[in-house]
Image: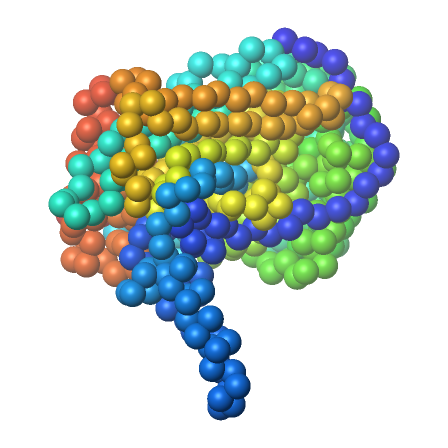
Length: 523
């Protein structure tokens, strides 16, 4: 395990573009949706729209006929895109940050702790479920990433296009608490009046878990904010885990006053910049009930600080602690996206210690920067269901993401082909991953080429778990939208997928949780 401190270079302020995705057979945008036969998706991509209009001049008739001929080259009589059976399909995939995992915790809290069967107000982001639940992929060798790919054929009705389940995982190296780089943490703590009661207790417990995870020589700063901002510690070097000075500051934290998130973040970043350490991982941890709205100025501020001091800047981890149902999840997701960090949700002391102590290295650390996954499939293939946040045929439209140590970036997708005659045991699927080394900023690469025969004969155990998670989120989305009655077929499919995964992974706690939650929602 490499333990060298990060080398930070020149100041660079930049933001990465938002991404829209493209599929092989002509879809212009894609996230997690079943795109096949989706009228809304077709509208977004322009299928069915007129390709042009002609004027009334007779002299334009020849040009009009040529336009119609060009149209027939790209569309069938029904308006569907013509199958491209000539060119390989190359797509670029991206999840959200590999540690954003707020959605499944909010669902569990609402259903199992609160005993409610409504998911109103809770986001269902499939990639966060893929992040939260465990996939036991083998770790990569030190300093690199490892690829894992699995494939299963899906039974389809006569006349339907051939469909497959495909799962790609990129695993990082193992890193113990002793091996991690030095940490420079700025705690930005919401002490507004809305934090009174359980939220402030969860804030304190989260901070205690962080304090227990620090080593001698790590540095910590503390900003408390409501309508005013107070710096309690600035670049304080702890003596070791559970430093008494830090614990005293945590214990003294009290809720009261109004809310000024922008002021709190501005003050937090000002302090984080003042104590910035080029030889450490610089992290800002925002703990709040999200009871304020962030404007564009806030998002720009956060994005700039994510690049502060060079390619590795002050990354933001956002922890939500509101259990009243008024938590502003969209706010925390937006700010952590801009801050290139994780969005987590703390429901009790156990979750606080899981995120900020047991998984401290995963939550705060970095194994690979700007990871991008390139998938090449035979002609005719397209993604029709996807677990990540975005994919595209244009790499510039897909935002690379960071990968934490002791972690895996997992993509589950269903793919289908309009040219099944091109698929035999020797047909190839290629996966290529690029990233930046965390110490040298050098571009790294790993790739693998598989045949359909190899993948179909391989171990699909963890693919079954990915399929179960996606079926589970399908059911949750429909329950949230229309209640149980309108979601019965999808619920049945979710139970079936969970059961299939449980047969392959008996005793898996994640699958048991999904089954329990879905059963509670469908009583």
